[in-house]
Length: 203
Image (cartoon, rainbow, N blue to C red; front, side, top):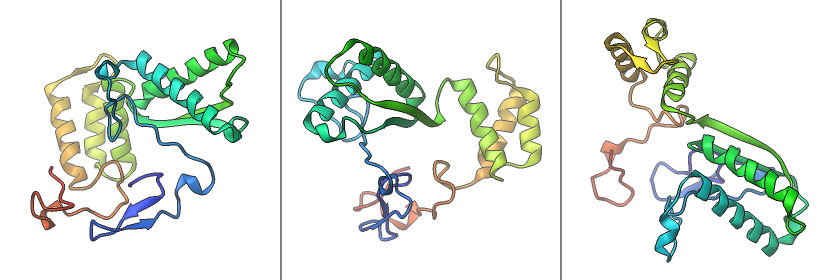
């Protein structure tokens, strides 16, 4: 609802409008939630919830092969995998599995052309460094805070001094009450809705 999908939520919190910049305007898009149990995904088999990166790649590959067998008209299309956050692990691992399986099978070959990862969560230290760089380059942190973070935070070793923690805390305070995953979106005022009411969001 905030990013590449076909719809946005109106300010009433109940109705939708079309996203003029949705990816499905130029491509066929499959939204696949991973691993099993995330979001709206579910299984009636409890063992399906025993997951990990390798299992997630296998499950996603199995889904894609079955989907392409069900809709063979898409088999020859160029195929791209995209993701964000922890998909910094999921996307390259699925791509690697597809490449390996394409070499083995004479059945369904996935026509993989490329991958893209946004805001990837590779590891904690790299991701925090990228987050604070993002805040600064988007005018959400001051030059002073950015300089302090760069001076006192050692992202190579992952050792964060008290001074580092102080500047990072300052950085969190500076960006204010916005959605950091969609900084240009209108603010969703959680206080305007009563807790527990339809459409309310708990902090």
